[in-house]
Image 1 (cartoon, helix red, strand yellow):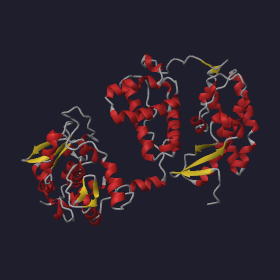
Image 2: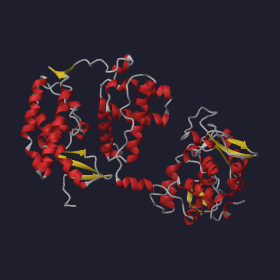
Image 3: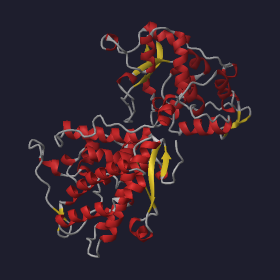
Image 4: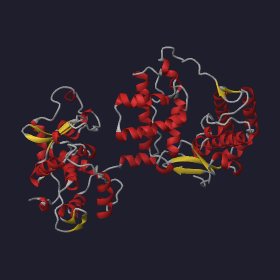
Length: 500
């Protein structure tokens, strides 16, 4: 691999082309540097793609300079910082005044005048020729977008839908259907807030385009935009974040097609986010179980062994603080429930199963709460481990029932932050990226694997889809024999200080 060059930037395994904005355009564009995703993790390929990116940026810089003082007032907000970040796609973020023929001639002149820049950027004639062809295709796309804008920037009426069988509302923009979608799907709270953010980002890409005209190019453009600056504080977004946003858009468009007949096909189907090799390797080793020593260190901490006071649970003392912070990790370890499932447990979710008490993970709520369940298989009953009973969990539930006003076994609390950042990182100095609260679930799976060879029992207890005909026919929950497997779940930890 040759010497790294300054105009290439690598973030999250993906290369970006970075270019300084000319001084005379700083005020108009609003920044001094722009970055364009090259959508590749290969260095040599990134260098080849730089030519087209550089050409398109140079072209649009020149276009900005050529605009006279009569550009329509809406021009400035149309060409935003985000638009600059996606100029390498289709140029639709720039709207001109004048006739379509004049625009086409100007595009041809720009192609001719700036062709020489390709040779310097690519380093060889063949690469420059390929880049020129690609740039011409991009310019042609830009012209097709601009042809709708004539004489003062007025947009012509949209043509009739390609599929005459679509609903008449298919000529309305994407944003007009968001509230109806939320109401139909009953999306509320945090989920609604997250989706609103995603939909606003997508609306900034498609604008007022009729929803029936949203195509694959819009999905690609949306992907590139959020991949480049969709993370916190404008940083490169992770594969997980990008894929989640794409899933939100895919689900929405699927609803538009199947429930409202607004689009003839879903352009986001089968589209997946780019993932770098580094992210792929990170995903493979994302979480792991706690070791025996790590488990012992966690449950030997003052929170479990004795602390100063309920407000000083990480300082050694004699106070036994057996509140929600004490019980949630123990329940997670001995049941395999996910944190979200534990947080939303209600008193009515402790039910009888084959003569013993069990947790019932389900969507139904007796108090009007929205309870997340990952999938159909996650709706399950998990017997309460005998150790939890021995340590005093039933007493905690009874005391909590007497004071709770929301019907939940555990009060609202930021459990993930408390455990991952405060207990693990600060108190125990455990700062491994593959260790977090979810590691308790992995520990349970390992212990359950040692307790029984019944694969179906393990799947049902952990909330995994049961393969074969057993998942279609028969009992919905674990059998008596399968439920008893949890009694054999053991952990190499000294629990003597927790026992009465």
